[in-house]
Amino acid sequence: MVDTGSAENTDKVLATVKFLENYENSIPQPLGYASETRSTINFNSVPPAQGIRWIINTTIGPEHIGGNEKISEGGLTISGGNVGEYAPPGAAIFAREELLARLSDTKPGAKPTPTGMLPTDTFSLVQMKLSNFVNGEGIVMYHAPHATTDGDLFVNFRGSDVIVTGDVFRQDTYPVIDVDKGGTIQGVLDALNHILDLAVPEFREEGGTMIIPGHGRLSDSADVGYYRDMCTVIRDRIQDMVNRGMTLAQVKAAKPTMDYDLRFGATTGPWTTDMFVEAVYKTLKPKK
Image 1 (cartoon, rainbow, N blue to C red):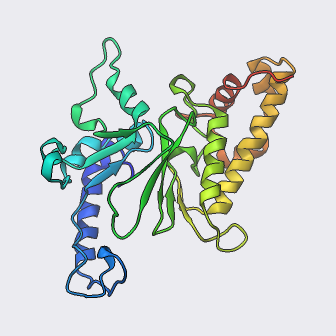
Image 2 (image 1 turned 180 degrees about the vertical axis):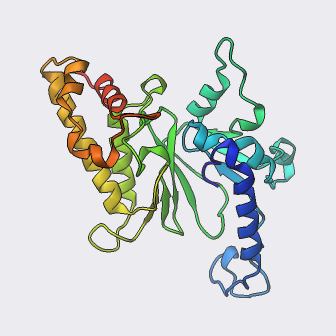
Image 3 (image 1 turned 120 degrees about the vertical axis):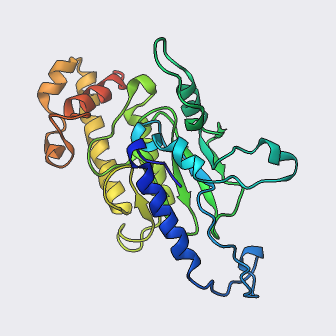
């Protein structure tokens, strides 16, 4: 499972997973070929669906990790041998090490993050391959450095040809860049370009690799390309204003996002257009 959603929706998520598990187990397994997971002998060689065994957190937002504790408890880490004693009691939770560090850093006067919400497995390199071949495919997690935060990642399901992007790509608003947590507009652009490098369109940038955004409808390379181009245009406009010594108030008054505001802008709510412009402005330095 990639991201567990908000805490309020955990019961619905678990019920849906159970429904899918029962449905999957009701379908006869087809003949397979080659390796041990694709044996040519069809005598139930493919194991039945076993519920949630691994969870991947793409970013630190509560709408992405709020259900960690309860959904992990509803799953199971299957292990054995020397490592069996150290396996977590529920489903393992994978994330970037920066995400774990931020969740573990309790601010004065704040309640500590419940242990069950914390990632059980982290990585610090540019990517991590899930050690198990899951449901007949390889799964690779890629770090998106300094995108919306410093601990973002996105996930590539190579067999299904699906990329789950987390909040580096979304269909409902401008990128929610948390500058205090290491987010930058250039990091978002780098992540979007990386996603486009991995995705393979079927025809004229449409179809092919399925892209699942952090928020909004299912997408493809064309959608990511449009979002990337929009972010690039706005980045370049604000960069030019920064180079000319304009203040934040002057940049906001110039409305560098105006031609995209009907699609992605907002004047109220948790992430407004002004907040986005300010975040971009803060992460850009003057260039000669």
